[in-house]
Structure formats: structure tokens, C-alpha cells
Length: 89
Image (cartoon, rainbow, N blue to C red; front, side, top):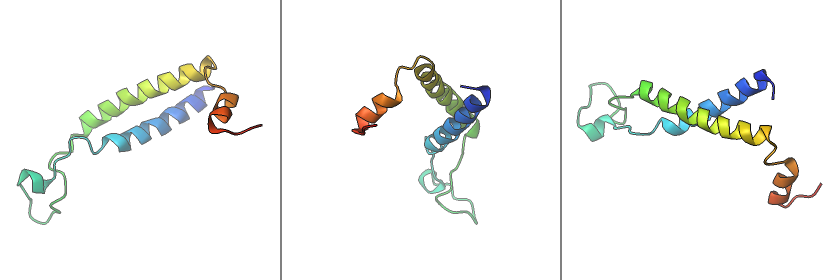
């Protein structure tokens, strides 16, 4: 895998994981009882984006590392995936 491809794959994995992690630990203004005037009651009280970005990076790095090892050592081949899906070549 070239460096450009690796960066592109990591970027896609990172964004996908970010959207999965964004809802973690979110408390709305309605749930906390502190609704600011002029805002939606469903708006989060604190986003904690720094913590979420850190978790996103850690989880993405782990997922990417596992995928890179699988790809590098050819642990799963295209034929394996085709057989798993019941497709023939």
C-alpha cells in the first residue's frame, strides 16, 4: 500500500469513527435542566470535542493498524471474501 493510499484510508476510517463517537456522553440542555434562552432544548450542554477527537484518533489508529496488518500479510484474500459472500469467480 502506498503512503498516499494509507493516508486516504486512515482519513476515511477517522471520519467514520468520529461520527460513531460523537454521540458518546452527550447530555442535552433539557436533560441537564439548564436551557439557555434562544437555543434548542436538545442542544448539548458541553460537547467535549477534545476528548472525542482523542478517542477518535486512538480508535481509528487501532482499526487502521489491524487492517494494515491484514492487508500486508495477506491474511484475508479476495477469494476468501468471495467465498464468504457465496460468490464465484
